[in-house]
Image (cartoon, rainbow, N blue to C red; front, side, top):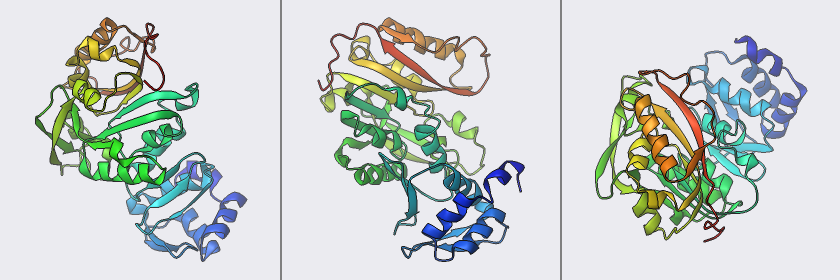
Length: 325
């Protein structure tokens, strides 16, 4: 048993939640505290059940569910966790990376959602994953367009957006790259980890499962995406595409970039995309009038290093960007 679990195990709050949710609350309380290697079944009061196992890493997710302060959670008929986040309902598939992505969006707040002021106009989500960021924007923006390249993850994003009352026609299955009309391979570094899906095979190899697979998907450029969706102005663009950001933005004309007010871009520096390419990306965006808010992002970086970081860009000359345009 890891020592960091101990303070949160034998709590009254955990016991109360067990009594509220499960057919056999005291059994669930003890078994989820101890989590032996022997798998066991947990039965919810709504009739659903789930098989838990330490080998599948179930204890990490369940410890988080018991201690995160979420409003409520249960199992759906599709064997997914349905969690009430307050303003958003979230679906989490067991034994995968969904819960870690959820924490990044809602708790770690890597995209600064909590600091966004006022209603937003058009929002674009490149690399929507399972749709958490998109769902969080639905009650904040006039319109949210999401794009996801992986078929399985796209289908999960559609379910997630529908659950929160969004327009599923605004969730697109495409790979945004430097040009429209091509076909690219989306490599799966780890089939259980949607954050390892990328057109950058060196990035997926970093996850090292040894069982890499891939799928093929059609491409669209950022310019054609905005034109096709009639997005003359974008208030906020979030991009987390596991390495494809370099091809996207380095091939996007300045005129297109100037239609965007703010961008949150997670950059993925690797052997294929070294620090020098990151410097080129920043320079190109600065040419379009963007200011990088992160201080000294390149100061401690060395060639050959693998790292990720969310960069925050905004444009000072945004008087032409109007909410809802």
